[in-house]
Image (cartoon, rainbow, N blue to C red):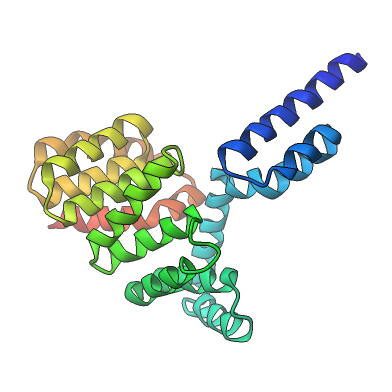
Length: 247
């Protein structure tokens, strides 16, 4: 039995080591992981792996949505105060995100770009935020530039989000053939309501009912079974979809 436990520790350390190498982490983590396989692996998972999981991102989205519902301007006010008092990169990222959530896309893009001028210039999450902000601000070319460079650097990073933003940027730039290919790829690869909804919104805007109707039927079937949390998490894209269906 002790050998079984030892094997699990080593496998966990190997998993973390691969994550270090693939994500360009500091190599001293390799020494820590193999010197203290169990403790080192647990610390690494809690610090670097769990914070970037889809579950954690969904939880943050739910908390932000709940906060906006109770006090729409609170997060932006608090983010401004935090950045004014302590102008760190983390607080600037928080401010940029709060501006985007508040509909201040142009200011958000400026803040994200400012974050990318310092030591976080290669940070993929910041670049993804910048891409979102530029697209929302009507600057699809800048959004697509960020997305293309991210894909070239790390193709598997937030693949669904990058794919959908790429499709929407191509659509905004009036490149329908490429946009359709990207939407189709995201829809088939990820099979999520968000991917279907984004594709359907694009198709409806173009008057392409043949593409939109099968997607809408899938969305209606799945969304009918959602609980309150699922409805809250998907509300932004569903609101846009409802608007597109009314046109």
